[in-house]
Length: 239
Image (cartoon, rainbow, N blue to C red; front, side, top):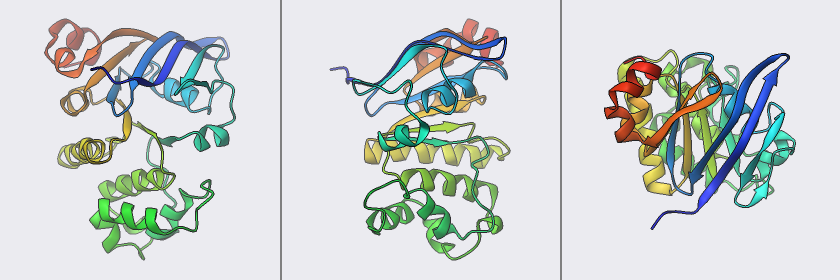
């Protein structure tokens, strides 16, 4: 039985001045799904994520979350609907402690004084629990990425978007982060959308994939099928 779509994107277009970065993109993400959005630099991956989460305006099309059109909502209202966004580079605040960074992620929750979510996030990421009183600037690259993900989880999202979480990380750490995300989905049922240039690594852990090229969907399907499709890999994914 196919899961109902939690997120539906219909004919979404977006521009930067005269440059059209997205051109009629349509896709669906099922509840509990783990999806990859792939493509080369400039394909439109980050713009898609930013437009879905309200950080960049759509010029046309719709974004529907669980039946509600959220296309024109301000970002802070999108967050309250259950979308969380981990930007490229993570964006943690180096001068704040691990715990202080995590608490920032729960500011929009009406029950932000409830400590149970903090306890749950620290249980998910033992290295963060060990360093909760340390400043984020002392963490390794992999630990910073864990902190960025953990901070997003503090909002108790229904769907988690990650933009290039492997950026700047060693291959071993990248595999650990990807595996961590898959385990997180498997354990909690959280819906995850992974925007990545590391196509092979992303397809190895996700269920489905969407390949962007020049702002359009060039290919889509089960991740295993995309991984084994020589034409798609050579034409759009570079491996």
